[in-house]
Image 1 (cartoon, rainbow, N blue to C red):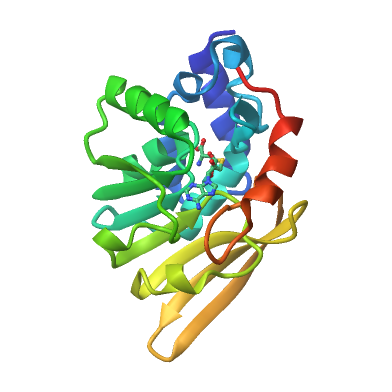
Image 2 (cartoon, rainbow, N blue to C red; image 1 turned 180 degrees about the vertical axis):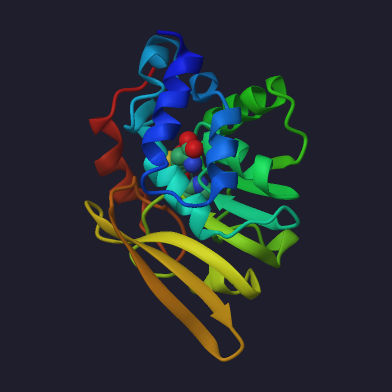
Length: 224
Ligand code: SAH
């Protein structure tokens, strides 16, 4: 079975729960195998997260689809991603939005993601090294923000970078399990929807988890 065939099979499977056809088409276009380590390419179209080094993971395809759908992208948006990781989610966003800004804490991951995205010809993704403050206020406001690491609470700093009417999708909970939240910024506050349980590596930074929690988490996943 070729990887292209396996990709189609995976998207068929996602179709049962994901309604936004644009998201499914984007996932058909992006080769996930280009974002996973050489030795796990044969697993690229299993619906599971995979280690990408530094104790971090590329998210499960179903979660990528669910989070992307929740952002409600139509093509004109400027989107912020926290946690570039492999760059796969950024590629999906690049298919669906005008401009993608993505920040990553680990420089080697950022460099590898940049390379993978360039090789595939994506020009509307800008990857930056994360700073102390969460997000990338320099280019705010964003129409949509996606956080692909788990936070202890909804970070105020990110609400401040979200445009009025913008959507923030973020896993919130403990280090071990979170609820996927969709937060909509309204004129007089926010509206929050719970999309269900999930499990992400920790978001580390001001207003999120500390370095110590990341070290605790990190060694459990093998590097490559
Ligand atoms: N979206 C990724 C998966 C990311 S895993 C993909 O498609 O492959 C979560 C990533 O978040 C890790 O690489 C981790 O280093 C990064 N991260 C954690 N805290 C962060 C922060 N405050 N800012 C930016 N990146 C962060």
